[in-house]
Image 1 (tube, rainbow, N blue to C red):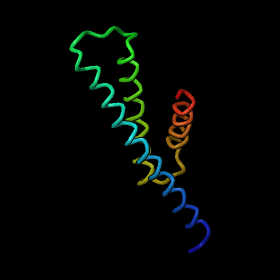
Image 2 (cartoon, one colour):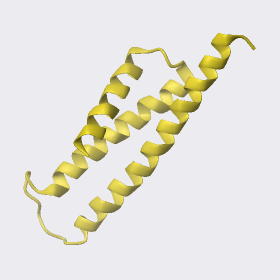
Image 3 (tube, one colour):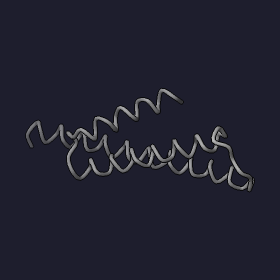
Length: 93
């Protein structure tokens, strides 16, 4: 194995780890949103549930891009956007 192969495998492993972590976060967000849904009330646009639902959609898009990156290769413009999004999500928490 040459150095570029080792680096490529290392990056793929990191990408898989990120995808796995975001899967867990998606599950937690879905549970949180479902907990609000049990109230059976209408939610205004400024209700925390709406913000959580928006965050969930963003996380699902990031997860989709990460999974695509596992198959298409790491060096893509989409991967840069995903990593930037992950950075901003981490900063918000």
